[in-house]
Image (cartoon, rainbow, N blue to C red; front, side):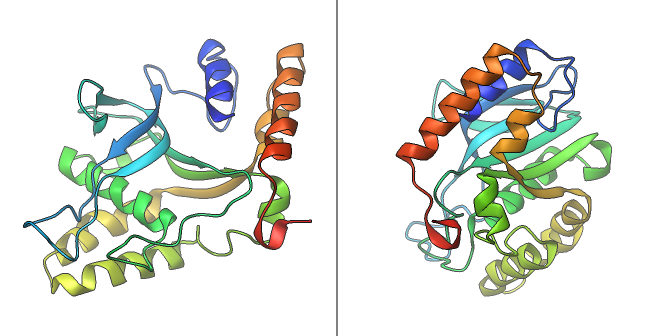
Length: 224
């Protein structure tokens, strides 16, 4: 669903939309975002692997010849990561950090990428982490406060605690400035489609969305 919407926006770059492209920006599905917490040694029990981004929008490079590792361009102006959901919520955590949910993990990866690239969050025109989901799920509170600054800050702080100060400087100098600047939102698929012009192509996307819901029934507090 998300790929179809982005394909349309890619072909109509002058159309205003929350997922619209800055000049020179592009999109990539299933890019690998490098983690701050990759293994330091073999068998590192605190470590995690790269994070798969449903879609990465902005100015970046992807090593598609290998695994799809993403790195930012030297002077990016757009950096947006989206998670696309239908019947499910965000994942709760990783094997070695059960409370480190999908929102906190994505935002921390974004902060790490900016730090590695030497890019200030204030230099970007658009910086965001969005969850796209059925409006019914959003209104029913399926995502709770997972997209709040408070939740993400607390979970990343908890994530770095076992490292006993190793990541404290990154947390203060890179993660917190990003958290102050980034836009965190859950956006309904219905709104995503409504913001497209009322053409036959949009009508086809709306019909496809209805089929997506039929084959991916809502789960959790938003289910009926």
